[in-house]
Image (cartoon, rainbow, N blue to C red):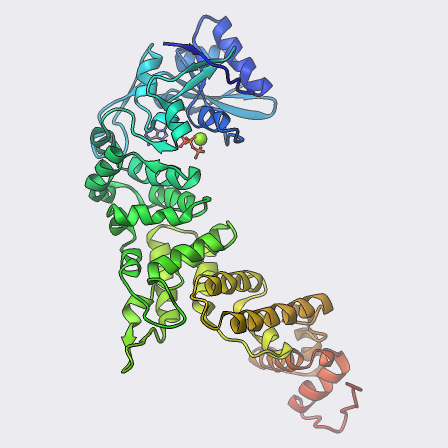
Length: 461
Ligand code: ATP
Ligand code: MG
């Protein structure tokens, strides 16, 4: 069963000493799964998982420092060198009663059985020193050929756990691999069973897919009827044409291009995924046969909230994505005051991301008027850079006057304080040199407390 291979996997010192200790105690032990796959590809593995014939209690006896991570699933975390390594007993997964998780797992002395329960051939290899690779299902060949292939009968494997359908898409996007024909056919047939999978698990796989090197492979999920189950809004985009000189793709293809063109960041990729989802319901065609999508930004923003809530995203992510989607089409006048006001509207934290969204959106359109559009965007970027390098005041915190200044002057605490500060900020956004205590108090506070213009001094601005 074991095969000596040329490739040597550089196993970290601590991991290897865990393997050695298990072996010296009379058990089999290998690194397994994702770390073997990644190491064979020359990629840095996320985590080093260990599989062993030792039972969990035996693992606990052998190592001094352990954490009971999931004893019932056979997993003990061994602490070494300040890090934790998951050591899992060889196991066979029991019946998947609800397509969600095995009702129970059974430990087995057979490495073959443990590898057989794993999802794809490239994830079902084990390795130990010195250069011993256990590859029973052709994982190495599939790595070379760039293929995602289920271990065993794909229909059976996807019926056991429907999440594997999304994992196939995710690994294909991360690695740029194609999904083997039978595996893809089974994924497509069983796609409706994804309804049994929790939103949280779907979210993890969707996010890994779109934050990969090949986010456009979400197209495969569409073609196989997989997105129809958990993201039907995307299917509508794929089916909505854009007969408009600014565009050369369907809404969906434009979306995929946008994701490819933007930096690999979860908020940015989610924004590009959703930014035009309002278009299908906003489509109108004028007398010349040109398609328009008036008001799609607001509809997209509201869909963003619905979709991200449905996928159980956290409030901070929802806020960021909804805001970026809402403003993605905003046109800003090419003046510093207009840019400062846009920064305040969109948010100081989000404005740099907004610029990235605009850039990707532009490049994912047709080349019609592209130079002009780019020139305009470059000018907004230049004005923004100036605002940041000068440190122009953009918020109440940096205003030369604060609430207690106003109250000390005699303004009634409460609403009026807020309203005067807002007027001051609006003025300073227009003319930054107005951010001067004396000037602001004379111009906005004095009239409010009835001192009129009598005490107003020239601010020299
Ligand atoms: P990542 O780089 O995302 O960590 P990974 O392959 O390590 O990728 P994990 O989710 O950490 O993925 O799982 C570790 C291993 O466990 C996989 O390589 C695979 O062998 C097995 N595995 C994980 N989830 C499943 C599943 N749903 N069905 C079958 N095997 C699975
Ligand atoms: Mg992993």
